[in-house]
Image (cartoon, rainbow, N blue to C red; front, side, top):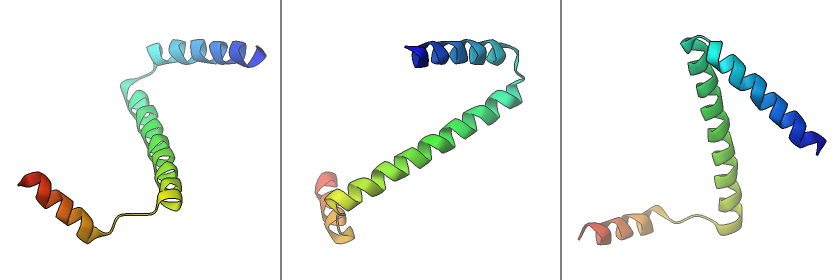
Length: 69
């Protein structure tokens, strides 16, 4: 319960500051969030490769040719 309240308070503070923050700061925040998401996506992809392996390039090319035809 305490964590939910802390998150709500934090979100309220963030929203209040976003309304007064200059555009360049907002752009920097968005870039940082996108970088963080890229890192999360990378980690997920690497974990998937460990579990499921990869597809050889030649197989991918054959599949792409089938899709075009």
